[in-house]
Length: 381
Image (cartoon, rainbow, N blue to C red; front, side, top):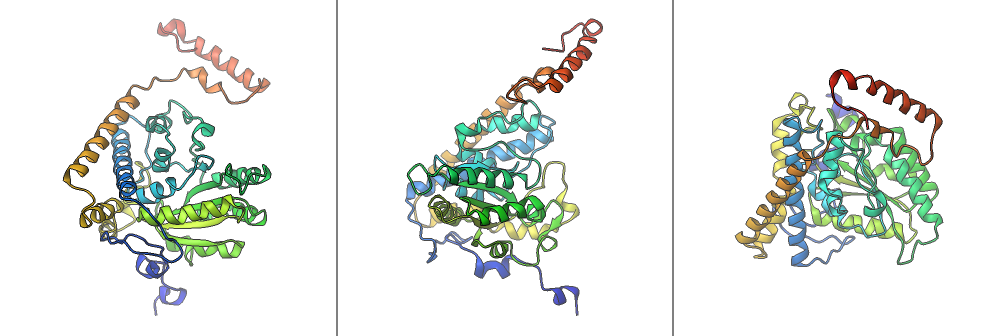
């Protein structure tokens, strides 16, 4: 008798198939789900395909910039495009997103310029966009902390008294499977449940918390954890952009109408490294990656369009050309980002003057000034 036979076999894609909400099979066949009907036009599907291709191309550009030393690191979304585009296109103008550091696809849906994302990883800004303008909060590096921020924000929305009106906005918090082991995430589940907060917890279960597999995070499917906190959970095929759109749309609508939180587990796979400082070949098998390639989110949409004569070669070539053009523009804009002045790190830290910070700023300015004579150039601002 093996250890796994005693404690239960780990959750696998095969075991999970009966639990997945799926509207588009890996072969590109459209299927229906009784709980998540989705009316989508040909133009909308073609638009979703365009989004998927563009964000993948931008993402690959980020990886290349990291390899070339132009950004410090990059957290790739490769393989998770459908989860992000599907959920991102379910948002309305009043919704607020609380991302991790990998939601480049959701940022695209919220009209955040991709170069602003790269600026953060290049070390020239702390985010570079206005969260209120885009309905998209700043990237969060600390694992799971954004779920508490999201829950608190959602409780504020609730107290504004606009739920159920045409001005109602829900909150969505993104995190990975590894974050579900963090106390912050579990605490946010408690608050969201008890206060019936209008928040959607969107877990991109990409199977690996850096080098730790899912079975070391949980012995049950992650979406079932919601039951213990008193709100619904659902597992969706994270490589199916249509299913992610339908499931997230319903969860957000429930939140906006006062029906409380939902945990969405997007069952997907991280095809690349955790970040460009990681080497996944040290902890997982190549055969696993090859198996997931057959579930590629872009290829299944392409297969659907082709098998139903909804797009021709000219369309796909046009999308590829547009994606390349955008990625090239983003790369050039990233390389052109100016280095910040050293003293700019003290700007926008506090809304009002802060005595201790002012003292630190003056000391640092004096330190920088001590180099000006010997180096022949001004290093302060």
